[in-house]
Length: 208
Image (cartoon, rainbow, N blue to C red):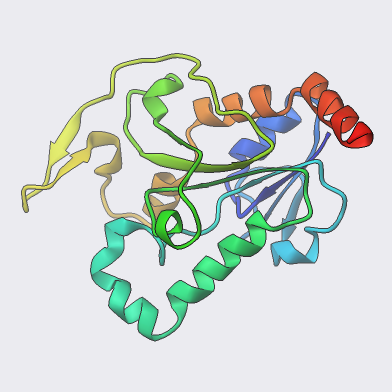
């Protein structure tokens, strides 16, 4: 299966699919953090290259409700509209099977509600990170290893955050916080990269 992992620099989801023998490429404006097939540039340069499946991780900076206090400025200067347009173009891509993930965001109210909401603790990680999935011709991800939700940290302002998220300042802190958990990446590859499921889907299209 030919798989495109859009807006991914970590290589985690790409490598999970590659480990199962798929022809997979990641794409991002940044270089990849790990060796593998990667296109550094605009995803729309390659989006029409005959992919069977796309997993997209569009930037959430201008969309996530966690940054709602900045929405007025982002709406005024057009950043939020541009981010929503980018998401809509990904969802409209001419690819048979699409999964798009983002945290809780205005995608839900401005485009459509997510098809599924998952947490890392459903896939073997003692952590919470609410992740919304918008799906096209794909089943919901099934939990693979339900564990404890993990410890939480109370900030000086009284806000409760997952302990894993409470990282000391560093140049890579934003990358660590935004990266896909390995258990989720593995579940995506194993459950959505099922060749038998893809073959059946192709038969349905051929006889429709």
